[in-house]
Each structure stands twice: as C-alpha cells, then as structure tokens.
Amino acid sequence: MRLLSTRSGQMTRGPVHHPLFARYYARISVGAESRLGMAGVRRRLLAGLSGRVIEIGAGNGLNFGHYPGTVAEVVAIEPEALLRQLALEAGLRAQVPVDVVPGVAEALPVKSEAFDAVVLSLVLCSVRDVARALGEVRRVLRPGGEVRFFEHGQGGGRMMTLTQHALDRILWPALTGGCHLAREPVAALREAGFRLGPHRRVMLPERGPALPTSYCTLGVAWRPDEPAEH
Image (cartoon, rainbow, N blue to C red; front, side):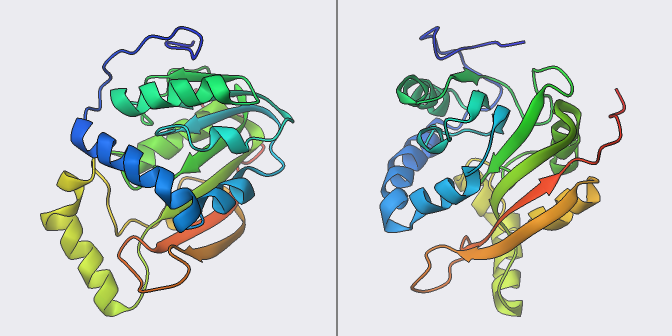
C-alpha cells in the first residue's frame, strides 16, 4: 500500500512534526556530503543492492542518487512533512524508481515480506521504539533479505559515554527531532533476531575532534530464512 508517491507532487502532514529541526537538518546535511565524507559513506552503504528496497527514515532523500541501477524500486518512508517534500523532489531526480511514503518505522504501511532489502541510514537514533521498529523491519523483509545500516550511537571512552547519556536525558532529543546519542544499533539488531554480517566503525568526521555524534557503524545484517510470524 502506497500512501504518497513522488509522482503525486503532494505533501501531507504526518505523525512526526519537527519543522525547525527539519530545516536545520536539510541545510547541514547537504554540506556534510562533502565536508564529512557522507557521499562516500552512502555509496558504500548502498553498493550492490538489487530488487525491491524499502528505506526507512529517508530524510531529504540524499541516498536516492546513490542507489545502483540493479535496484528495481525504492519505497522511502519519511514521517516529517518538510523532509518528505524534499525527498519527493530528490526522488524525481533519481535514476531508479522512488516512491516517497508517509509513515513511521514502528508501523510501516507496506505488506509483509514484500522487500529484498531494508536501508537504515541514521534513523534508529530517532525512532520512538527501536525494538518495535526492528520488528517491522523483519516483517517487511523476505526470508533471507538483507538490512544495510549506517547508524550512530554509543562510543568512545567512559567520559564520552557519560556525556552521551547525559545529553540524552536533559537536552539532545528535544533539540534534534528525537535523536538519541547513546543507543546501540548493532546490539539492537542482534536482539531483534537479525544475523549480523560484516560491520565496522566509521568516525564522522574522520579527522578532527570526536563529537558525541561521531561514533557510527556501517554494515549489513540478514533476516533469518524462517517465515515471519504475522
């Protein structure tokens, strides 16, 4: 079921509404493509994908230009209205078919076992319920389907970890559209029943001081081959 397509040219307000942060994110994320090397990370994240792909938390659509031609279709979920409008525009410029759909990670508006791959790109930090969101990822993936993920989370030494937890409690989520600094995406994927494949630490920026947001992981996981419970 598709609720909004890049071909419709329409924008509706979704269940997530962070207009100030969305404007800020849209501005800084474009600069980060070259300044922080994010364009290269996106290429590595998406290289070799094929078939039907669902991208959860598509933001302003900066991944779209990096999908290889072997991808038959991308269904991109984005709950924030302003970012979704920017993703709609990016989808029209993409070299692969892209549908931009409103919805939240915890209740994806698509059928079970409908996709060959799921892309999670800087989204698990801000979902309201990580376990439920990853349960939805398992539901919509076909048996044996893969998850490509690039996520930031807890990292560094004791002082950095304490700083991340403190910011999560007092300030950071309110200022950044619900983002959390101290989540552990790899552990969450494992606990959700995914089989972890190759993954590695990526620091952003690669050079310069480490920030609370710097500790990222790029990798792949697979849904086990057994049928999902519906």
